[in-house]
Image 1 (cartoon, rainbow, N blue to C red):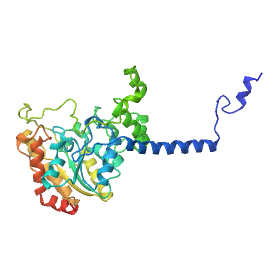
Image 2 (cartoon, rainbow, N blue to C red):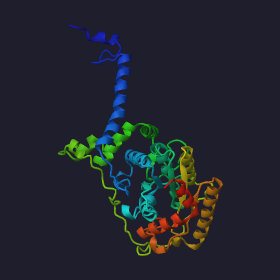
Image 3 (tube, rainbow, N blue to C red):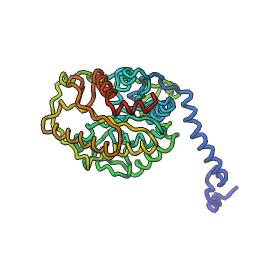
Image 4 (cartoon, rainbow, N blue to C red):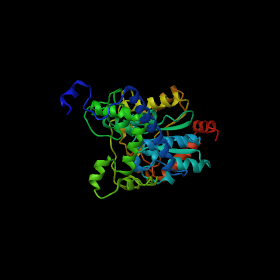
Length: 372
């Protein structure tokens, strides 16, 4: 009978299987290969919607793995990419009333692709472009800036008071430091690793698309009689899936929204404006042709003192873009009845904005330069 105390003299003697250094290298290589092959193979069996007005489905707004696929497809088709937050995505309208749709319709082309993601404030948009928009190279990009994000310290993320905001996995985890963002060191490191590992992005996609943002154990606890394999239907939500809860697609005046007096953040100290500047720099460093659309904000909602400050901010935005030689359009406000709230147009508002954009000389030069 063997002496159980003898295993103490052998390193890891209690382990049933021990790998040599060479075997660890082989095992690591196999895992790395599978980690690359599985996400690539999955894209072949899980189709994306294929229409001229496609956009990221609302329920997949934090599924950045699908955004990567959308980017790659639009770039491969040599589209002009329209990038921005919910204004570009079209929070109050279906896919056939968005800005990109009307740009295509009025120009008689299918040159514009909607790469808007609902809720991507500039700090999140910078992370989205840097980590998940790496295929955007040598393309024509219309980059949207929504002044809403500098209308208060809270929107600007420059307040020191902690609060929950959209897309925390996209914001800088270490530098620049966001004072209102609280996350553990382990959590921040995990986010950084996930940004750089496609396999982890794919597993996150499975949780988001098929398991209501739960891992398998948590999902099976909530669905004890359901088969997790059958839950993976390989069918993604429709791009026309409405936001939840559905927004009231009526003029802001019909909704009895009152005029207000936001406390605008100075551009010189704004975290969101600095993030937007970083996105412009990132896209240009990747040899993209960038055109910036700033607004139009619903100036009809602003009280007189705030309106005066906002118009000065518009002037400063245009001055910076001019100094950086970035072609741009900083439009005047649309008619009041074409807004649903402070920054989102209704369908007719998007059509009017598309018409103004296509008539702007700097945009005409930009669009002609795209070869369309």
